Length: 201
View 1 (cartoon, rainbow, N blue to C red):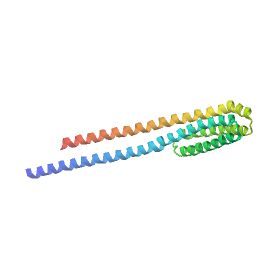
View 2 (view 1 turned 30 degrees about the vertical axis):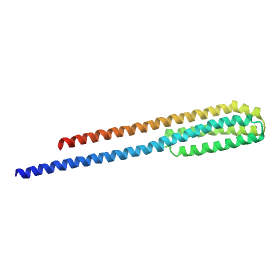
View 3 (view 1 turned 135 degrees about the horizontal axis):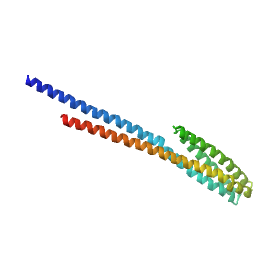
View 4 (view 1 turned 120 degrees about the vertical axis):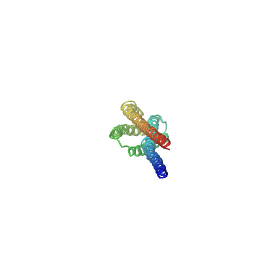
């Protein structure tokens, strides 16, 4: 009778330990999948869009330089060359902006992008005038727009881009912190289950 009782106790203990081991594995797998999901989200919604915004910002600054250079260019060939650069930079910005827009999920992010599109349209109109006047050798008129209304629309666009970058950095930081919290939670649960398994063993 005692022998059967001992066997039953051993079997019960073995089953409990096996269940705990299974729970540890299950908890580990659950949190690994959660962390993997958040890591993917961090790249797709955080790191990659930040790279796109960096490209937009860099090309925008180059655009401003070329807008100035097309006015100061001394020959028609040089003016044409700067006009070509302006066209290429605008196409690059458009490509990066379209890719960035596809990553947006929040209402705040979409509203900010709409603000960016509006500011970009206003600056594009001034840039078109500057380039057209420069190509006609009307440098004084082109400079007046560059330093007047063009400076205002340029500054407004720069401010929106900076705001978008700041917002995306905060968003990415939030995702990273959530991922870190999941890792700590997983460690805590697995530690508790392992201690329970050792005590029952």
